[in-house]
Amino acid sequence: MERRLDEHVTASPAIPGDDTELLAGLERGEDRAMATLYDRYSRIVYSVALRVLRDPAAAEDVLQEIFMQMWRSPQSFTAARGSLGGWLSVVARNRSIDTLRRKRPSEQVEEIALASPFNLADDSERNLLMEKARAAVVLLPAEQRKTLEMAFFDGLTHSEIAEMTGDPLGTVKTRIRSGLSTLRKAFQS
Amino acid sequence: MSSAPHIQPDDLTLFALQFLPESEMLAARQHVQECEACRRQVGWIQGDLASYALSAEAHDAPAHARERLLAAVAREKKVVPLQQQSRSRAAAAPTLVPTRRHDPEPDYSAPEPRLFTMGREEEPRRAGFWGFAGWAIAAALAVAAGLQFRQHQDLQQQLADANTRITAAQTESARAEAAMQALTGNGAAQVALHLPASAGSVAAVQPYGQAVYTANTGALVFVASHLDPLAPHKVYELWLLPADKSAPIAAGTFKPDARGNASVVMPQIPKGVAAGGFGVTVEADGGSPVPTSAVVLSGA
Image (tube, rainbow over all chains, first blue to last red):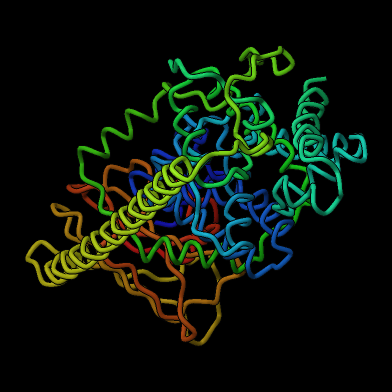
């Protein structure tokens, strides 16, 4: 009997391919699809949440909240929104900021499809992009880098940043946009 | 397509960062929903933000977080209607492409007439009492509408949660009834599972399992005892071995308790499959679509 089962044993499990397929699996209630998506994206989601919240327990709660939301409503995470990994990283940031500010979850912006040329579903491409992102951020002009960090990871609004740094509001807004624009060019080069 | 003036790029970035005040957020959101050009720009900004997010120092989530999530998922098992199953399978076919490698980038640098402003940098206009009163009433109405919208959303969420709980309770009840039928039905076959001879174990108390299976209904109840503890991130997985010698069918994952006892009750398996036997392997958390390790229990 064990020989019969052993005949079917493979060297490595056949993991179903792309995110669309896995999201369809969630709609069918397949917990295996959930496990695969978690293995693929938990690191990104947790890292972003931890960077914003600086509290491992709170970051873990955000991680759980996002993946449970994905389990309950996979249709709201459809691939029509663009790169699932990229979208999850933005959602992780927004949920973490909501936690930081003790706000209700805001979903207004997340309804919009995210345009990204990168495939974060692929392990090697994901790791490469993480390295590339860190390298690109280091090369940003200091003011842009600091302003972007305060806005994205610290969740400070443009008005709060202007108040803290003494820079004009318009300058802060332009720095945020220019910083993102510079990053995009660095990624495309 | 919106006929309203476009939102300035700086303000679109603030919109994507969720930094606009609530009232401006609503107006911007409405415009973006109607204006394809602005929606595309927000999509690109979101893509930039996603790229920037990757610069966060990488940390693995704690090991127990995965178990916590999968346990929560198991508690919220879904009941998926057959129609939806076939729909979602069809949707999984090649229709969606998650990445866009060749989308043209919108030109952020192109000057756009500043026809739409978010209003906070403008000099406040002086208005008389009636003008002020009008704005106050409009603001109050906007706040009231916002609150009502929130309440509506909360109620919708509560209703959805209640429906989920009711569905879960009904599912549990149906499973319990089916399990009872599997254990007592006329067509139920019992299979004892033991350590394979090749395992060569000399332990005084060896692992043991018992499966009760009714082929025509696909009802299966499996209990095991004296199981060895699992390594972290591992689960036992039960396999149904079809009598026609086709590929094993995954019949659920399980972990033993502190005394080595475990069970699988009514896993989702196809109906009408004649069983040639059952087997158990050790797999990674979440299970595997095919067995990947040596058999630890088997029986025919």
